[in-house]
Structure formats: C-alpha cells, structure tokens
Amino acid sequence: MESVSFRDGNTNCGNIINESFNTFNLSNEDAEIMRWLSPLEPSNRHQAVRTERFEGVGDWLLGTREFREWSSSEGGADKAVLFCSGNPGVGKTYLR
Amino acid sequence: MLREPGSRKDISKVSGGVLWRMGIPLTARNTSSLVIDSLCDRAGEENIAVVGLYYDYLAQQEQTITNITGAIMKQLVVRGEIPKDLREAVQKGKKEFGGRGPRLADLMGMLKIAIASLPQVFICLDALDECLPRRLPELFESLRDIVQESPRTRIFLTGRPHVREDVLRYFTEAVMIPISPNPDDIRNYVEMRLNRDADLEAMSNSLRADIVRVILEKTSEM
Image 1 (tube, rainbow over the protein chains, first blue to last red):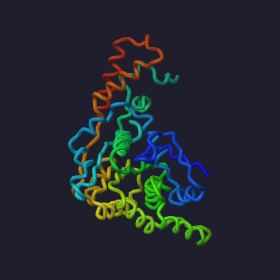
Image 2: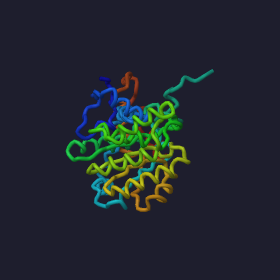
Image 3: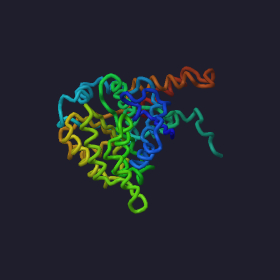
Image 4: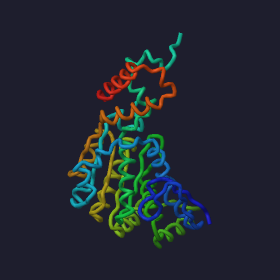
C-alpha cells in the first residue's frame, strides 16, 4: 500500500474526508492512476490559502441573492456560471 | 543613510505595501477558498462534489488544460470507485511509446461521464487572469460542453475585471459580482493585528487611530 496525501481541501469534500490532515491509503495501482491523471495537486494550494483566511471576511458574498440563486442551481445551464471580479491589488494572493 | 524600513513616521506615506506586509486576507483568492470551503461543508449533507483549482502565474507552464482536466478528474475519482475506462487508459498509456500521458479528448470524455453520474458538481477556478490567455478559449469551451451535458453543474470563477468579457462571450448569462475590499472587514482585521502587536504599549492611541485611518484610505483607492 502506498500512502498518498490529499490534505488539501478540494478533495476533502463529500463523504471522503472532512478534516484536512487525513490521508488516503491507495493501492500502488490507484496511486499510479492518480499520478498519471495529472501532476497538479490543487488541494495543497487550497490548504495554504484557507490557512491565511481571516474569519468572517468575505462572508457577505455567501449571503447575497446572486450567490444563493447560483448555488441552488435552479437556473439550469444558462445560470451555471458565477464570476467574481477583483481589481488589480485585490485579485492577487495578497494586496500589494 | 538608509531609513529604517517600517519606521512609524512613515505611516502617512504608506502604500498598499503595508497591506501586503500585513497580509490582509481580502482578496479574490481568499473569496475562492471561502466559497470552496462553504460548498465543501454543504457537500457533507447534500450529495455534491466540489472540484477545481487555483491558477498561478508561477505554475503557468504546467497548468495546461490537459493537466487541469486530469486534476479535476482526480478530485472526482478519489471520491469513489475508479472507472474501468480510466484503469484501461492508464494501462494502455503505459505500454505505448515508453509511457504516454493522458490525451485531453480522452480525459474530457471520462470527466463528462464522471460528472453526469453525480447529482451535482461545483467546479471552482480561481484567478483566470493567471492562466495563459491563449489557453482560455479552450478552457471555456470545455466548461461549456460540460454544462451542456450536465446542466446542474455550477461553475465558480474569479479573475481580474478584464477577464469578464471573455467569460461573457462564452456564458452570456453569467452572474457577475465585483469583489472590493470591504471597510468593515479591513477595520476588523487591522484592529486584530494591532491588538496582537508585540510592543502594544509603545503605540499611542493616536498612532493607532492613524494606522487604521490611513490603511482604510489607501484601500478605498484600490
């Protein structure tokens, strides 16, 4: 067995794992499949970004009518996309 | 003679650089992480899957559409059984040409099947402006294909305002929300950081007020 770490939030969804320090025990073959699919590990980045997040910041977005309607998926394919735009200096990892 | 960096006399001249040093977490990227976490929390109760990634200038070369599609597929298959098609594709790829990686068309086919087999998938892509611009059309076309096949799929995107037009070209009814620094969020954050200052006694109330005022002024200009 080979231990592959998925300690990043993007994979911590659904009924897989809810905590960020879990590891999946994958067979060698399954681990190989994961590596074959992509060298990218988005969950590492997610873990780094969420660690820096300040509690409460941005919560307003989740409460907007636009966000709630979008995430409820009632609009079907036409309303599939939500785009949040930030100006230079806001859209970067940290303000500059 | 060089001035001591960070001299408190310079507070009236601070630029956004101070914000950078304070690491104020008010960015679109943090918004993405908040949305991802909020959706993941819901995923525990509702049968939804949350996948995606953060675009990054520094990773532009390896963040190809193929690698991104593969990463999203990886996030989906780790949830359950690995599809037989995928196992076979890996075995086949290993034997040819000394080991070939996945092809985009094959990955997209498998990804569409995987998404269609789930009640709902949220795809979150942060900082589209950090993707190589020439790769964006292919990305949007792929996303559009996915949505057409699985209309319940939700796509969350962030990026600088100039990407807006690109998004609208492919998704004419996309919902647009501008993210700007919220003064209350900034004030709360700066107050928290000042309260944690190692040398709290050295800071007079007026200096403290100045710091908060100047930072709020500077962020309102962004």
